[in-house]
Length: 121
Image (cartoon, rainbow, N blue to C red; front, top):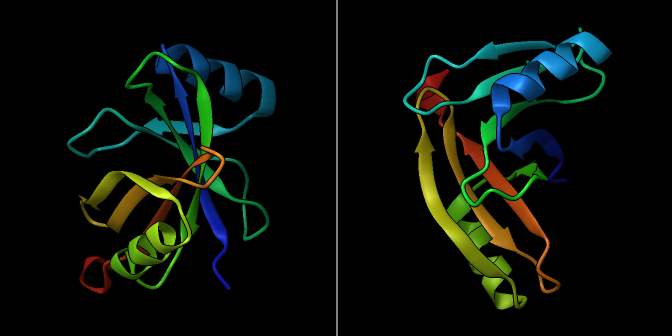
């Protein structure tokens, strides 16, 4: 089964939201050492729950996006389009992690889907 494995919170000012979530919920939020401005969010210890990220919203809108783990981004892009969904951000690499893409379902709900890069582990 393909599970939600990550969330992304897109906001106008990620640093302010990082401090908010740290102070309110005790989350660990650290800037990612990658090519994009992105903050990794650890919501707890162990395997219960999921972790996520904070980023600057590309269009100024505030939203939360769930990211679903799949076997192949390419395969699921085809399935999404066959069921009437729309790919809004094509497959792109996440350095040291894998590949991700973003789509809208038939009602316009935005979600992400990703697969690991076995050579990155």
